[in-house]
Length: 227
Image (cartoon, rainbow, N blue to C red; front, side, top):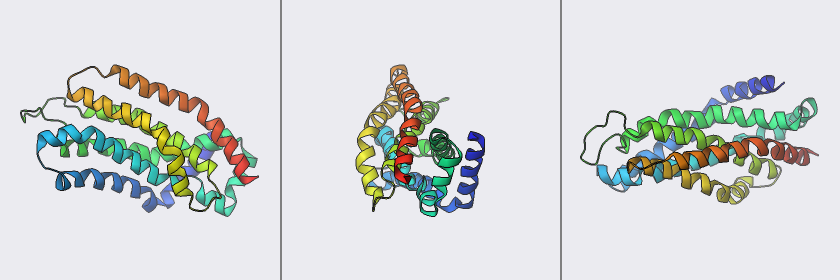
């Protein structure tokens, strides 16, 4: 049943592909504007790159949360899905589909933005063979699923509320702070040629914790919202 639900979510996302691309374009535009707004100097961009990339990814994910349940809730499909399948499966299928169409593209497009922020160059301006892009991508690969899982909790709790986008931001942003801190710390440590295994381990632990508990919390909140 989970695979069927996942296919349904991906099919709906394909039909609404314009809305799906908005967070990706937002991510690209925000990072791309920093060299124009602040400074084009390579060393300065390298210093601010970890925070810029991660804050942009966080805001892009927050922007995409409105696509979680709104359509299904408004047309009554969500209630039927909860009757046909377990709330946990419904919640997990929506989160996985949401990450595949919004979170994963952020990870895949990030190398282009890493080049824009000069992450692949040494302080002397020499192009590095490996650079810091793989570490940045790995941190996003661990962090963006956690952002989607935590964001789904906020959306499920605010279903039916007017102006729920602002309510979700107020509820979820404090939970996003640890992911933001350790995600940017991974890139900062890599730029400083320091160890970053501890930060990656914390991101992985957050993801494992969220993946274990949040589907049950989301499913319960959805049942309450449609009852």
